[in-house]
View (spheres, rainbow, N blue to C red):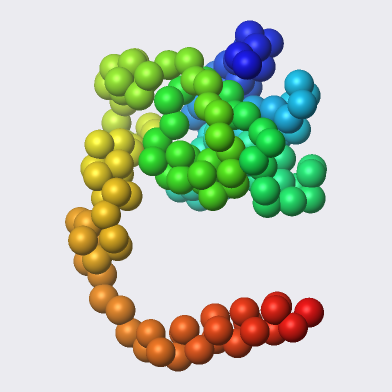
Length: 164
């Protein structure tokens, strides 16, 4: 169930970008059982990491604090509608409930005057389209090599885990 205090905290975190170099105004919190277990702010420029979005940073923080990768009993609050990367990370972590403030369209309009040097640009529509198809069906140039060898390693690891 939505709680205003968690959205307020996500927006507070995003506000840090007004004074913290290398950040962008996208904040998020992960909540479990009525408590914040992870927080994140977009640090893509500061960390030289294009995946350092507020949501992914909050998920990483929650995983470290809880010492797990299964966040299926958690919710995520974000100051802005998450991109496909962040939605994918939420799915991988098992997060089943998302609350967000600004729409991606509203954020895009607010940032329209910025040059790419001023921010990390994301073509949200293209990202969503490419993420909805197999890797070799999207816009990226893709080729596959040595599949049998890679599958052999995965199978050996699986057998080892099943024997534990």
